[in-house]
Length: 431
Image (cartoon, rainbow, N blue to C red; front, side, top):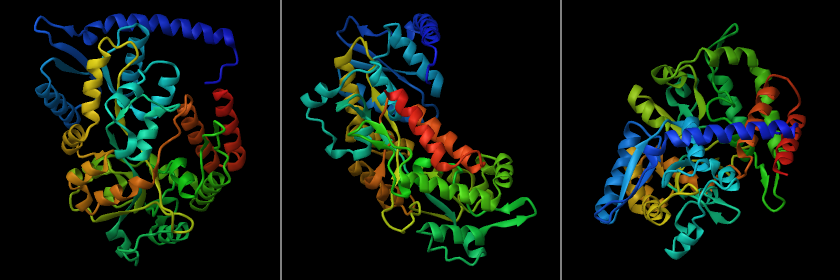
């Protein structure tokens, strides 16, 4: 947020610190650890996973505890998403954080910049841990200003999902999905069935699901950040070109009719891709488990996100990590657990049970992902995948890009002007 009133900022900061200290005091029981009479140091690990995800985390914790006689990890489930982040920040502000926390790598830059994470560089150097065996984007996302602040654990990627039965119905070859933007448009037109203002089936919606500007900007060959200059480049000509294409698509298919379609779409077993109402979409590998659950006989394929040339395919990836919050009581013991979770053994346990992608290529091979016709496509794109810029204002950039897309497709400004404005706002915040 850009503060125009400095005094107002002080007021908000003071209020937040008061709330943080109060919340931290309330959460002291969940962060308590220490050394018991048997000489075993208990460390607390906060996470937000439930269901199978929690089972996978507990399996890693159990494996670690069996290997260590002098350290015991106590896994504690906390509320998911933003509330978990707020609770963690409050604990750090109050000087009573957990020893280890589950963490979204996307937020490493902002948290490291404000001094809320422990620098792990010296620990990693001492134990000979380098980024060589990790996918480059994952290691980069865990690093801020050349210092390591997180140990990457899992990852994802985005690809084009397409319904093979819908392709056959439209007279398209289900084994030849679109590779270029032109081919994507041609397929979308043939796949679309419209009755008046209502879509019975829509071929494709560029901004639906994982069709973020990151997905298309990189597909068009653009760049969102100049690392040497330390400046955001949201108005890169190729990024602008990608948003111009999305805007043209919105006008051609009438964005209001598309909005009516998406607003009425369901989720779970009523997902429009499962019901046959949406023939193609940009999605992530996490969708696969839902498709297997709700429609195991769904006849679909995945392919790289189309590019203007039909070459230089790419994607972008995020994922989770484990971190040691600043002020943790037992950082040395915490590092031992962080190191184990990030190792091949730890990742094989977690990702194997949770059916997610590891950030270590050899683990994905051990888990058999490279032999699966769907999972293998995600594995194949990972070496070419991007990570979102690791910035103190990463969330502001995300929001500004989202706003630019929404305004552009609804005709509220030209793509170039909208992205220039977003650029100026984020760079001003960075300065």
